[in-house]
Length: 196
Image 1: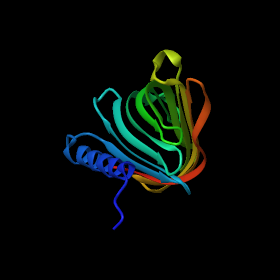
Image 2 (image 1 turned 120 degrees about the horizontal axis):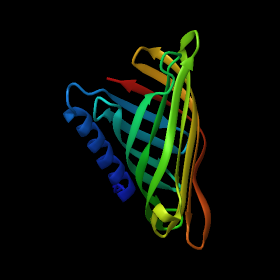
Image 3 (image 1 turned 135 degrees about the vertical axis):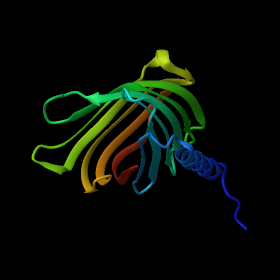
């Protein structure tokens, strides 16, 4: 009988944590669940409002079947950067990550600073674009890590008022001491996000 790997057990445990947090969040808070997959990678995240002024919290987990995984917790201040005009939601914040580069047997913790943007097409609010970037220089990279860079660009389509599907390009790279920059993921993925 095949035994589950420790990576599989960690993945299941993190999914249980995310769904538990979704279940116990305050009933007045807005939340969203985001899931995307590619041929060899997947990411799931849960985000929720923490205050009425736009402070949002998130938990996420990324796994690549051959390269490694990353668990993250983030805080961002999100607001409309174009009040009075077509809404453009911009977020500024930080994301703490535990990175396990299993392909080279190294792990580290980093604190990435970043921004996100999201808007819909003017005159056709079912079509949207968005993306984010997070960067951790050496000063906010701990353990054996020297830097971390993640960016993503998405094209979104709202099937429902609170449900959308998207096609995205994502790149995740981490640099360790004495090792060239390791690409944990680079390529297209498809996903959906539901809000509740």
